[in-house]
Image (cartoon, rainbow, N blue to C red; front, side, top):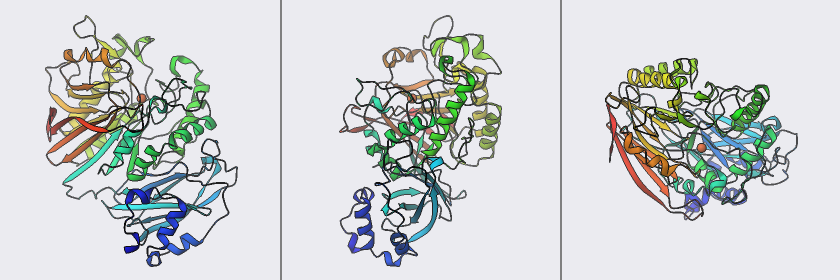
Length: 518
Ligand SMILES: [Fe+2]
C-alpha cells in the first residue's frame, strides 16, 4: 500500500499505459489472482497507443456492468488505423485501483466490423459497490476506469445521488461541465441524448469538428472519434457508469421514424442512414444491447428508458418550424412518440416496480408550454409531447395511475433548464399535479430562443423554473422522503477554464407531486 502513497485517484486514472504498468507492478500485484499474466501476456504490437477514446462503463445492474472501449490508434480514421484484422483484448475488474484484488477478468476480441469497439458485460460483482477496470491490447494498458454496481433490489437504500446531462454540441464550446461532473460524488450519469451533432463545419464556432454532415457509417465513426477524444468527456466516463439514450442529432435533427428532416432523403435512403447512425452509436456507448443490424434497435430498457424518434409519427401540422399554432393533428389519437409497444412496456414497468421513486429518463419535454399565452389558439413546440397531445395524455395517465405519485421525469433535448409540474390534464392548470419533470440544460449546445421563451413563462403556471442562457448539468439527490435536483452551470463554454456553480435547487416530497424551491 505504501508504494502508492501520494498517487491520487485523478493522477492514477490519467496515468499513461507505461506509468500505470509501473505503478501496478510496484503495488503488490503479486497478490492478484492472475495479475502477472495480464501484464505479461503481450500481443502483437499495435501501430500506436490504442486507447485514444478512453474507457467507459454503463448500464449497471446489481451484479454486473458493461465495460467499453474502442481501439483507435488513429482516432479520426473510420477503422481507427487498425485495418481489418481482429485484435485480442483482455480486461480486468478489481476492488482497488491498483488491481491487487481482481474480482473478474477475461478475454474478448475487438472486431473490425464493430470499429474495434469492445462491450464486456462483467458479471459476478457485488451490489452497490465501487470497482475499477482496465483493458489491455497488444502491449498497451488502458487508463483505469471507476464504476459502481446498482444496489440490490431489496436493499433499504437510504440515499442515492446521480447526475444527468444532454446535448453536447462540440462546435458550441468546451465540455468543461464534464470536468466538474467528474469530481461529483454520484452513483451514475444518465445521458439523455444528442451525444454528437450531425451538422457540417461552422468555421466561426469556438471549436470545430470535421465535416461534412455524416451520411454513412465511416463518417459517423469519425464524428464519434472527434467527440470521444475530448478529455473532459473521457474523465466523466471514466469516473462513473453511464446510462445512455439518444435523441435526434445522433442521426439527424428532428427526424421521425423513416422520415428525414424536411424529407431531404427518400425513406429507403434515410433508413440506410439511420442504420449507419445507430450502428455507430452502439459502437461508441457502454450499453447492454446487441449490435444493431439494420435501421431498428430497441434501446429502451428498465434502467432508464430511451428512444422516441424511431417510433414517432411525423411532426404534426406540416409546420416548416418546430413551433407553431396548434392544429387538429396535435390531438390525433393515433399520433405517437413512443409507439404502442413501448407505451405498453412503460406502463407495465412502472406498475411492476416497487421502487420508492420511479424515474422516467427520456428526451423531449413532457410539460405543456404555450409559447404565446393569452392568444386564441395555443402555440406549441411540435417536436415535444405537446405536438402529440393524445399520447401526452396517455403518458401522464400512466405516470398517475402506475406510479402512484412517486414518478419523476428527467428530460433532455431542449437546451434549457425547466422544472414543470405535470397536470392530470395537460394545459388545464386547475387539474391535479401528478408528477414533476426536471429538464436539464445542455453541456454546450446553445438555445437561440432563450429570451423569447422567457417572456412566455409567466403565462404557464405549471412551469416552476426556467433558465435558457446557461449550460451545465443537473445532480439529483434522493432520499426516501425527498427528491432534490440541483442545477449546476458553468461560467462559460467559450473557455476550458470555466468555473461551476449551483444556481437553482428544487425538491419534491415523496407521494406529494409538485416541485418547490429548496
Ligand atoms: Fe440537443
